Length: 426
Image (tube, rainbow, N blue to C red; front, side):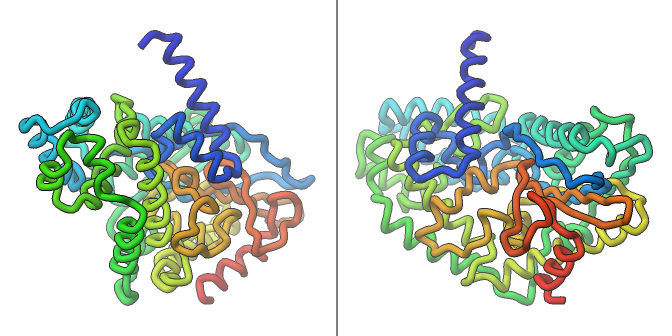
């Protein structure tokens, strides 16, 4: 690929991402997916930063502390389950001469992506490393008063390597804008279980209930012959190889959703017929929302997941605002903890519980819980000691509709603190 083509491709991606950051209608998003099928990858979409202006703090207030939770950056598939479900079928079909030309092209590109993932399942890609380096450098660049020469950061990570490497890259990004802040790096099963991704054992998981909803919904909206007719030249023989066409197709969709995150950058989702790609996106959108958001049906479980994390935000803010010892608390984990948190506190755009089949377009998995998604709470203080806080989600200022702001996106911290503790059942 020549430099001119690469530049134009980058411009198109930035342009589409900028549009995607806005409040999209269903028609808007559908048209974007026509132009760039990778946007239908759901929570496997990469993190894209869109520069936005920040609202100045009220007069006399200065940033003093940052509290953060970030999902790891772009990664390879977390395990080989979808590869094992898809590759043997397509390989067998190829050996039997059952692949259409589209099927042959997909098989070729699949082999390239799968070869890159060999021995790397669940690991951060180089793109994921760049995402977190950028998040860190921009954070330090926006708030230099916080990250001064004497700054110390407390960074706590999930035990998974992709999160540990995300932590390292974000800290390197912060240090690229400062005079080498001091960092306390922390990880371990204790922190993972207590709040980074707490999974309650005394509350029934929604996993089985969501799986049943997902399968019923998928079977109703998706015919079994669409992908078999697209990728194979003999439907009956293909179905004999595939088994359950719905399960095969969803595994294929998840596998293809990872290609553009790898070094190869191959957009495997382009091999899906457009209408069928949107079916898979819509089914995945509802499935993920109901599996991990705080909804009416599964509120008890996801609230139990989010509460220890929210309590950690409050307790560490209490500690740091009193002592001033840390400039920032950085936490690195997973979308499956971040989504319960932001839906529990009801940040703007996530404050309403939605019916399963009406999740989209009010909630869009590709934009609202992509790789690298992060919540930043920026604390401000004035000379009299009054504390304000503002919320940034994916580096954009956001609101808490449940509370009244003092000015713009700035909230009274004691009021926010009281609200958070109420959400925690205290």
